[in-house]
Image 1 (cartoon, rainbow, N blue to C red):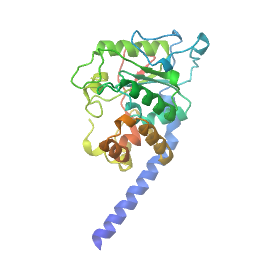
Image 2: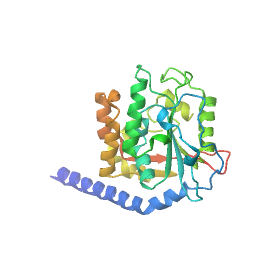
Image 3: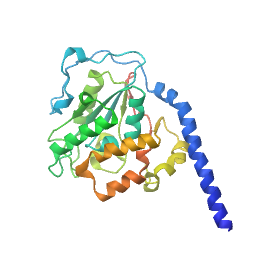
Image 4: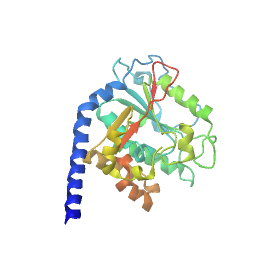
Length: 274
């Protein structure tokens, strides 16, 4: 009986702590949003296109579509390695930024052609972005032989740096968001984008929220039930990747509910990298 009562009390206390996290996050989100809004670059080529092959849907159509920059606008660049990373690891961030009317750009550094499914995975990525709210003309997909979807291949950090820098300059980016030093899942291509998360924290789903709240971070994105459903729909767009363990991932991964970021010191006063 004592054990049963203890379990009930722990459950109630944990439920209250989760509700408290959501309540406090709702109060703090405007401050977090302002934190990543900085003075921006005002120069850039609206017809900018990397020398590498891009998704045709991501090419700007005219000079009239040049980004209109205001001093307080958040212009964020999310850098991923493969199609499906945007919703598998960053759905909370994407949904919160889109909800806040931030200008969000996605740079995906490969087509995900490991199993010769590159064309299909590009279509799936655009479908996923449509669900998440990222316009197709804000999506850039790199198809370069030096950046293959292969964990056995070490990607060129110089090439990645040049692609990111071009996007920062040409789309007036104020904040860059990407993987942590472990690549989140340990994938070599993820780690190459950023050169420690424990397995237990990774798969506690919504139960992990109080833990993330207690650990210090520079920027945090947290979503609720309805936004989770949208993130799930985005994941389901990647039909070629829906193996059984990814379906379990959708149910249990913390990254379907919360993202936390640490700032990286860079040699520019205009751009923050997380």
